[in-house]
Image (cartoon, rainbow, N blue to C red; front, side, top):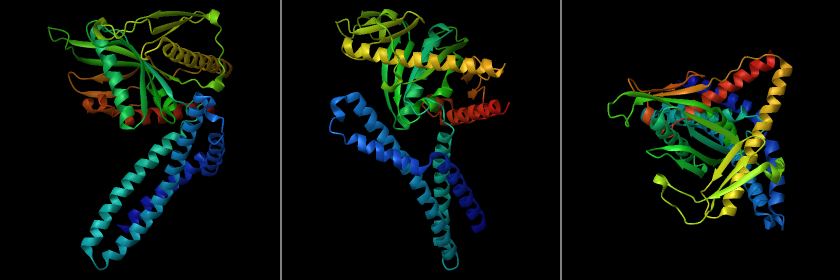
Length: 378
């Protein structure tokens, strides 16, 4: 028994060293020191947005370092617990059994925490550390598609809540009968964009339609878009002549008025045709600022995609790895959610729609990293 436990602990230590080699605790400490110095500047809060960015980065870096140091300490504690259990086994079998039970539980928890840290080491894209802006749009399938889009919105917001991430809904366009036409929300957390970016694509739902009085099976679709949140340092200039700004009254489900002023804002980027609407804030100024932020984020991603296409052309014809339909949610005639890229699946559809999607996300990140590595070696 002790030999098996020692082998598991050795494997955890090996995994930790691999993570530490990528995360570089020394570099993290240097970053924390630099951010701490910036946060102490007397004029920091003269620019609230900049101050918020600095303090947020400092908090994230400190949390990341704490996870690393805590994991290292917990592995040492496992060694001590194993030694203690071995000594008790010679004199007190009952106490030893309890200690081994504690050891089993802690081994599993440390392994899970290290797996989460290991996933982060695969997020090395240019914008992966950023906060995320998620947009969900209903597709083919009529009212079922609108309902499905709302189910996905709740799923991602519950996922963020489960992980204690901050999420803010910026805009929701409600459908006439049920569900939503589209929604946009931000997720504020370390590596939110890199993590959620694997969720981008077409999602499909198969079920007996609750909106069909004949009880027929319906297939509906929704599109998920994930972009990195813009930062001041990105410097994307948008001339006033490139945008059209329309204002209108915010509205909720069924068209009922939320307020009586033209506070909602719709910005159209004329060169690309990108349209962004915001109505969550109470003032027109706040909604315009939020809409511009999302527009800049989409233009940033567009620029990144253009650069990637240029690199792809230089590298030759590489077969596309992302299909139009990336995940199926089947509620009838059986219950199964399956990712068509990774093969990861779950039979607990209720849990998935309640935000339990870490398994799908982790599998997606590992799958993407494997594909990128393969492309590098071609």
